[in-house]
Length: 240
Image (cartoon, rainbow, N blue to C red; front, side):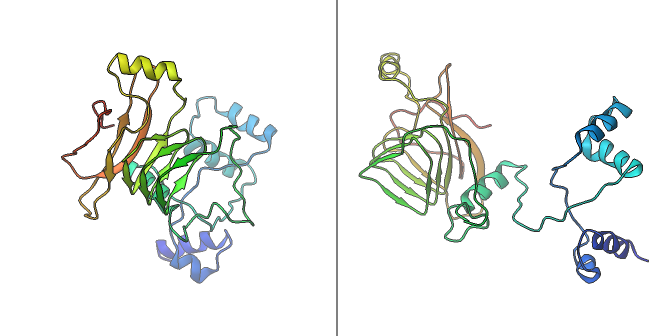
C-alpha cells in the first residue's frame, strides 16, 4: 500500500469517503482542542515538561485514551504572514466574500465596545467595511477595511488597504498639544493617498501614522517601494 493510500484510509476515519480521502491526502490542524477538564489535568500531570499540544499532549492522549478528530470543511485561512493576513481581510470587502460576516445561519458575535456609530461627512465609500467609532471627513475609500476609531481627514484617498484603527481617541487638549509640539495627530492626515497598485510586485508592510510615546494607530497596506506620501501630518513611516 502506498503512503498516499495509507493517508487516505486515515482520512476516511474522519468522515471522508475512501475515494475523497485519497484525493485529499493532506489535512491541517486548526489548533482547536476540546478536553474533559479532569482528563486534561491528568495529561498535563503525566508529563510536566510537555509544552506543545500538537507535538506532545495530543500524541500521548491518542496512545493512552479515546481521541477523535472532527473534520471541519468550512472557511479557514492560514494568516501566518502579513501578506496572508492582508489578503484575508481584504477579501471581506468582496461582493460575495469567502467568509460571510452577515450569514444569518452562522452569526458572528463580537465583543461589545460601546463605541458611537461612525461619522461620515462628504465622503465616498465603495466596497469597504467601516468599523465602529470612525470619523471620516471628505475622503474617498475603496475596497478597504477601516478599523475602530479611525480618523481620516479631508482629501484622503484609500484603496485596497487595511487600517487597523486606534486604541484610544485623542482629546481636544491632546490634539492642541500635538500641534504646539509639532507632532502629528493620531489618524490619517489631509491629502494622503494610500493606493495599492495593480502590479503584483508589491510589498506588504505596516505603516505607523500619528505615532507618539503614548499610543499609536497602525495601518496595514500594500504598496510598491519607494513610497511617496503627500501629507502635512505624517511622522516618519516605519516598516515592521
